[in-house]
Amino acid sequence: MVREAVFSSLMPRLPGSRVLDLFAGTGAWGIEALSRGAVSAVFVDIDQQACDLIHTNLTNCGWRCSEEIQILRKEAARWLTSMEAKAETQEFDLIFADPPYNRGFEETVLRVLSGGKLLSADGVLVLESNARQVLPTYAGKLLQYKTKTYGDTRISYYHPIQQNGTAGKEGNTHGYSGSPGGV
Image (cartoon, rainbow, N blue to C red; front, side, top):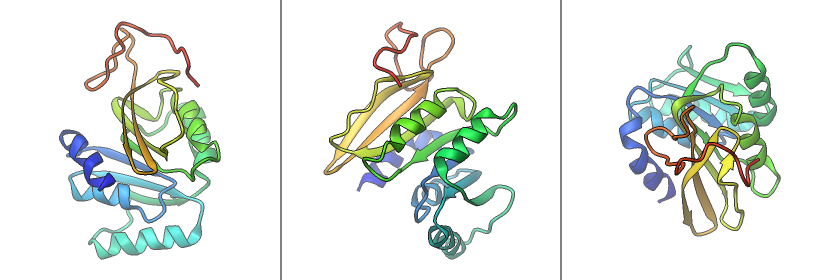
């Protein structure tokens, strides 16, 4: 139910998109994006069994690992930090992050992605968290423009704030370009 609702709201963005699936687990977010028209996906998870399962799931769906579809066995927060620090790095149109709840990874994801290198200017971060956890509205260059709660799960959508204080296609900063309450 959660994934279907998220993808329904993102449908216009999916064709041709470049996707990053952090804390990928089964790879469900990235695989669903590929099935709906994404052109590439990078799956990042530290657990070898999870990476093997992603590989199996991709194979069962008819995809193979290639330059466009990669599985990285890395600790997601460290990998993000190293990628954000690089002078040149790949940009993603959609970033899905489903970190283990209540361990501070949500804040780390927001802090690192707020630097603005990995998420494209019109990109969207979909961050899953515990429904009781309140994430900041602003996180550096990111604006939370929508949240939805499904039982124990909260989905928060973030969009980069543009130079002129707007937040691209989805968000609306109401003219604000700072970061009160941010990370």
